[in-house]
Image 1: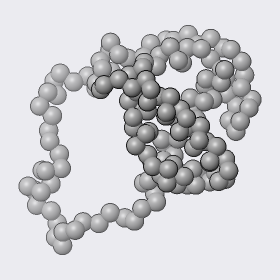
Image 2: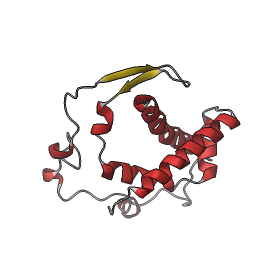
Image 3: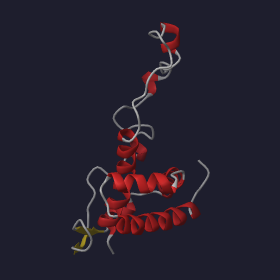
Image 4: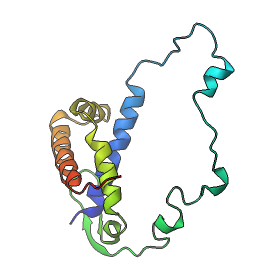
Length: 151
């Protein structure tokens, strides 16, 4: 059971993809030949109407959906396989809700194969290693989509 190592790898992939997407494109340039007007800029942002009710500490779900403040992690084994050694622990999976897996899986399923290859290429993974990671990621996405519930 390599919970910590696998979860770290799965969480790292979106970060790598986001980094690649931000660094592998030409600079964004305005199509205007002048500075935008105040009215044009106002279209980009809307002030929140319910700011007083928002919880900036706990986020959208509030304290009810926050992770346990002091979870107990049960050490299972040291994981020395793969590229990044880690630890197999039990508590991590207890905190992940089906809705969280569903939401993350739906987001990851929107990535194209080219985007995944580009992300691993940007992280300097050899092609054969990237193919194995992508195949495993695709398998996990497929498993996660089976859990999907309506948002």
